[in-house]
Length: 383
Image (cartoon, rainbow, N blue to C red):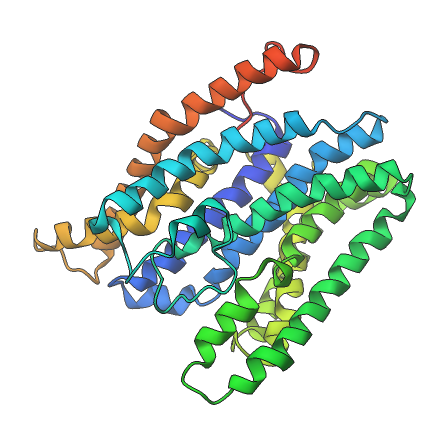
């Protein structure tokens, strides 16, 4: 779908940036050009940009109902989430379990962890590194499940005016959780060979330590929905906000140079979330270059981003040895470009054969169950 709306164009640019960053960063696990190591050390934050975008997009829908005193429809919300995520996820999961040649690392975690979206808890990436990147999907699924329920509870008890305090409390909880985890589970392992694995297992992957990006997105949505005068003032300075966002991210880059240090572990995630949050605000500002510039390429990459996210490691793992047999240098730029092209092609096939049909089915279901809202509407792949 071509996006002519500036708001969608701006968010498409950021979604494309997020997935491209993830692809480049994860390509380092295969044979790769040296320059990728030089420029992608901060690439792990691409997933944090996804968190901010998800927090904003999902909570905007929910806040829109609250703003007009309309009850949040959990059936509608979960139908949207289910058909957007689960079909493609299950197809790729089936490929991983049925085609061992698709495994990019040593072994898969147990199937039940994937089916229950609990893979990111007590996750031993050293021994179960295959399809590891869906830890972030687990975080988002927990958000999709719990956040609407929290909002319904807040509305039920007529406590919407305390929403700011609720978000602040969650942010402080994230700090406290990381501090507790650091001192009780991570610091005692310092100096041991297992420190890196412990850090990932206890700090990096668990949902309760990775709330910052989602909360940044939720905060933007709340401010823009319930404080329209503040939104009007803030969005006047879109390009300034964009520059400020890159400045904050530069500071986060230096802070997280040693990603597993105390300060990076405790303060790095919220600083990264703040930087990407500013980019999202800029993308929503009508006078910002991100909002004004409409690109078919970034819209296309954004549309394929979920499929790219799911399938990229397995496809790269399969493609690179095949291309190497054709005398293409494994660490060369041509190999890198061909692996990217193959991954995009695989994501396009996944989108056309799985994602798009189920999005159309989703729209038919929504139109039949909620005709006043969805009759005649097209599927919105960003939702």
